[in-house]
Image (cartoon, rainbow, N blue to C red; front, side, top):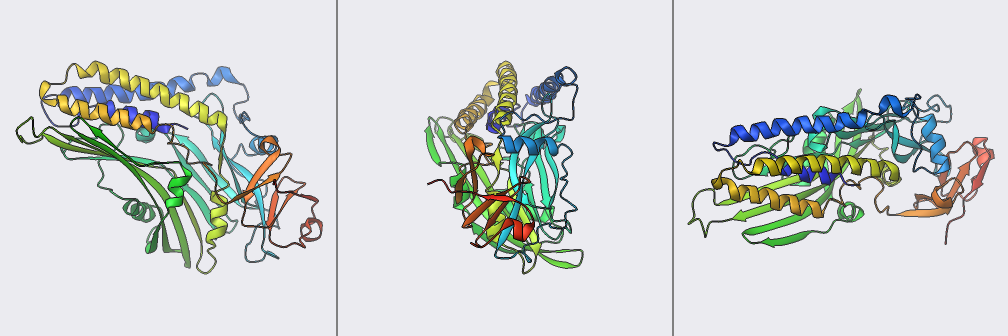
Length: 436
């Protein structure tokens, strides 16, 4: 997945400092915004001719069992919401967890609705949202993630925290990417504090911990690249924040985790410029991968349970290819505009233009790593033989000793060696054998 192809390309648009060329930069910003909107419109143009059944969801890239779920989830609501056997972790015998596969749908990004990702959620939970496209998401190439799942009584929930991007610079310049903002956020901890406060009214921060494992999951490697006049340094920070809040008079606990990648570009011409003001500049861009949040009543928050749900996320390869194509088209448009406008930039801003080019090159190197946040390098899982799974196999949480696939397509994980699906749930099931 390559969301960074476009995010990096946007760094080539508009000027980075105030000068007599600001009017030219403003025109470039407006033209880029129009180009982005046109690119998104071009992808929607084939809607009417693609398929008369506009409500169906593309099953390309999904395993047989996941395809069945994709067709059933068009309305983003499951038909299990009124089941009397809905999941309640406080009442399950022998640490039994019953899960059902769901999909995260991109309903409007391409010619027809498409399954973006799959995830396991507790049986009986409801889901809401998906991948959304809107002009307000220009900073992240026109789309973002707004998805959640929650228990029937809303006492427990999980959600995907939308991806985000922002910039900082030492020149007092406007953002280089249309739709982005200048924000003084310089750590993942600071980012999580802001996100928790925005998502949960009145939240109180209780604790924070670093999550280097989240960085390993996306395969990120820090780097420091010397440049002719400065350097480019890239690093990532992963963290998780525990917080408390009140929901309908109930004392609640929540957790939010995220990874933020920082790209810091230092351009230093002070020696050749004789120390003139502005001869040393710094530019910092940041990209926050889609995060993960979970909530439960105080005393019922189970970190291992919610982590198992997070690790069940898998990306649909066909959607990944489609989104990569979208990002590439946006990147090419941005590069074309930037090259044309470069001729109008005054000589006293040449080193700033070089700064933007260096930033583009550095971010291109990380393009293949970004947008892997869903289902990347799953850790702590067990692989089982399952004819309904991709390639005849299914990855489930390794926290439990036994796994069952029930006749209705749901799965049960348990530590209870005596669990019997017919006796306990009145459903036929097949015990899955771990792949050795």
